[in-house]
Image (cartoon, rainbow, N blue to C red; front, top):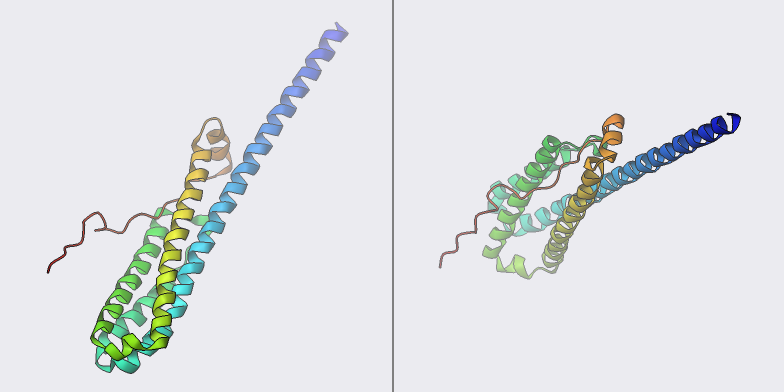
Length: 197
């Protein structure tokens, strides 16, 4: 009888330790993936900040050549101010907060597009070395934004999948791990641009 009780106790302890090991491993995996999402988000903010930092120099360069384009310049400055005021807490990343952030950045991108379009009317500006360098840096930054947004979505997808798969979803629910939103295409992106000659 004593030997049977001892075997049962050892088996129970082994099961408890195995369960504890699984819980610890799964929980720590969720934490690591959540940190990955937050790090990816920080990199997204970093490249958007790089773009925001280039804008004052770009506006100042254009202003010297295109004095009567003040309305466009003001819109760029205003959109930049709005975009830099919206911050998102990566520990509380929601679809709504990401959408507001994305909308502000979209407005800034649109204003920048208009600014670059008016430069076509100023051949001297288009030939200015400082402007050409700023334009190249801005183009490179836009490419970085695309890459970092894609990376963020991939990391968020991995995390979201992990917290939704059984049996980890039970543990994720118990400890409050919640889904992270994705960057989505801007509204109207599904329509091809109209090209006229």
